[in-house]
Amino acid sequence: MALTSAAQGGKSRRNPFPASWPARLGWALVLIYVVYASSTLDVSWDRFIAGLGYGGEFLGRMVPPNFSRWKLLLEGLLESLEIAVIASTMGILLSLPIGFLAARNMMPAWISWMARAVIAICRSFHPVIVAILFVKAVGFGALAGILALVVASVGFIAKLFAEAVEEISLKQVEAVRASGATFANVIIYGVLPQVLSRFIGFSTYQLDSNLRNSTMVGIVGAGGIGGTLFAAFQRFDYDFVSAILISIIAVIMLGEYISGHARRVFE
Image (tube, helix red, strand yellow):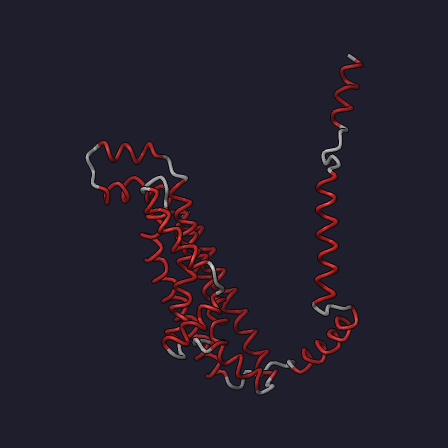
């Protein structure tokens, strides 16, 4: 008994993270590369210290925030909200069929790979880069921002929706098929009930994300409050910049609360 408990005690005291020389060598190489990359990018402690002083001066010029041009501020926020809502709606509607086509347990391999290629293309670029492309294609304004966020929405929601469909139980699907249902009825009665709550969660999260991204795409001329923010920076109008940033934070927090409440209601 004593030997057994001693052996068990030895096992319990065994190091849960045993030494691995390949892992240590890998971490050492990462550290060496970080130091090398910092030297090539002119990252230095002196610049960081100097930046703290400039940053403090910049923050000082932002206080107090100036809300005197509240009409211009409200106009930009409403345009960003409209861009986010329209882009989310269109992106969700497009993501439904693309997500189904990308699900490998529901579609032939050649169809799912084509759908996944579309999703991969949509996920390849940041929304700001896509917005620049659409600004060149359709001109300045909200349309470019909407199209850019639609692409971003498809890349995010369609991927997660395809993965959710691949995780469903096929017993319910086979039961619906055995009743002689059409393919559309199989999707409606066999697939959607199993993934509906998750899809609603994905959609509310994407709306929240598009609210944030709609403020970014405006910086490159794709509509929304981002254009107003960029213009204020160019004029060195930092007290108005502060007011814009505070308003954006308030809108994002409100959107986070609403999306969280929606997830709790539908899940």
